[in-house]
Image 1: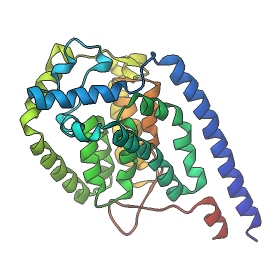
Image 2 (image 1 turned 45 degrees about the vertical axis):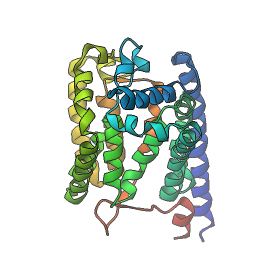
Image 3 (image 1 turned 45 degrees about the horizontal axis):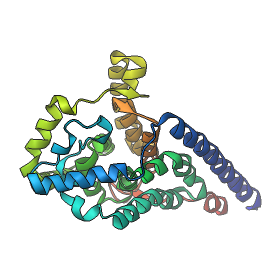
Length: 302
C-alpha cells in the first residue's frame, strides 16, 4: 500500500538533490568567474591583526586605515576580542568546517534527504568563504540554528548580530509570531554582550561614521540593479512579507531573503547565507521552537 508513495517520495528527494547539485556547479563557476583572485586565509589574517591591534593599541580599527575595503575590519569589537584564541588556525578552520556542515544536519533533521538540496546548492559560495578564512560559514551555521532552539536561539542570534550586524533582520520572525519571550531573551543577550564590548563600542561607531569606513555599493544589491526608490519599496515589501509569513513554514526563510533585498552590497559568495533559509514549521507546543518535519519516507509510511 505504501510502496508507491514511498517511491514517489524517494524520486522527489532525488530530483531535489540533483537540482541542488546542478545549482552548486553553476554557483561554483559563477563564484570563480566573478570574484577577484585572493590568497587562502586572507580574511583570517585580517581578524588576527584586528585582535592584536585591540590588545596592543586599544583599537582593532587602526589596521583598516589605508587598506582596500575588502581587507578592512568593519565588525563590532566582539570578534577582535575573541580573535587571539579563536583565530588559532586549527581551531578556526575546525569551527568553520563545523559551521558549514551543520546546516546539512539541520536540513536532514527538518525535511529528510530532500532538505539537503539547499545547503548543497550554495556549497560553492560556502567553500569560497571557507578557503578565505572568512567567518561566514560559522555565522551561517549559527543563523540556521536559531529557529530550531527556543531557549538558545535568541542568544545565538544576538551573538551573530554582534559580529555581522545584518542578521538582526531575523528578529522579524519573532515579531510576526508575537513571540515576546524570544524577543526578551534576544534583547537581554544583546545588552549583556554590548556591556562586554563597551570600552570599544565608541571606537566602532566613530569608525563606521568616518570616511575610511565608506564602502562602495556593488554586486547584485537591489539599489545597484534597480535604483534607490525600488530598493526602498522592495525593502518595505520584504519586511511586510517577513512579518505576515512568520507563522508559516517559510516564515524564517523570508527574513533571510529580506537580508538580500535590503543589503546595499552583496556578491555571488554572499549567497552562502541562503543556507540559513531552511524551511521550518513553528511548533504547536513551544513558542519560538521548531519541530522536526517528517521526511519523505516517513510521510509515505504514515
